[in-house]
Image (cartoon, rainbow, N blue to C red; front, side):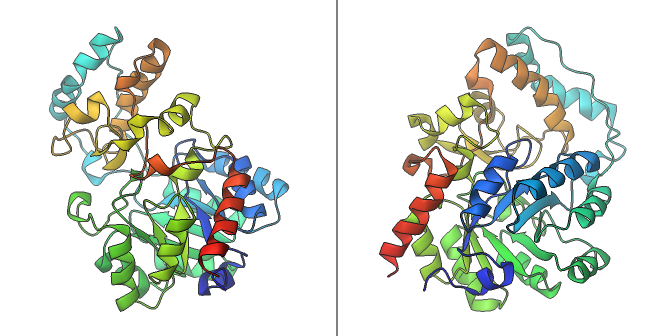
Length: 356
């Protein structure tokens, strides 16, 4: 039976279908519970939240479902080069974006480079919530954190964009590894080499990992329907993770403009860019991403996010969607569903027909 894999047993879920942990406000309790209650694993991307906000979200999730779910954090949530960042660099780079602020007739915001990491405090709250799964990106937590997860019965899932990263994660005895192919929307979670040097496709990466590691593999990137699910499982994945397909659902926290764009012809064209946050991610092509090439130096993460936040707010208000970054994977052209429960049922029923 296709839906009985090593990972469904480990995570105690019925189907090897995971919702991508959509961060920056895109995750919602409704989306998570829709997936978990349907037998998959719902996820909540919490890397931007304060510890108190994570605790509040966890309480709401625990009140809404008794099924397993995942909370996702970023091990590296502040770029190292932000420490002692020079005022000259800040002025030089923000000046690159000045024409966009001028077009919207708004000032460039005052930016404070003093941005401490929240990760350690976030993890402490996660231990209080005790989700079934703790997934993480941009590195590996300390052995103390991993050992505490084991003590509490929390399964750990790391993200790899290369075989080397997967081997590194396996050496730390994580419970599962996301094979994050370059087709995926959102941030590239590379941590051993720069993201631009870690662009392996999903199905090639799954096969590489299958040949060299024993840890269960979760295929992510470009999978939006049952054909993708079946293909990934056939190639050796123990589960699949869908991000863009769930982002497009009514239950997600994406704006109406974002969801509309995902179902438009514009979604055929995506680009890798650092222009939104300072870290490379895949989004629909837009004017800023085209003009600020990924080779161009931008502000460190998350300072770049704070610069663009004001621009994004004004662009929405003025209807200047060409200046707005909409995350998307490379296969949005095959999106069909706007309801998470209906998407789950379609994935399950159609995969049943393909993998009889």
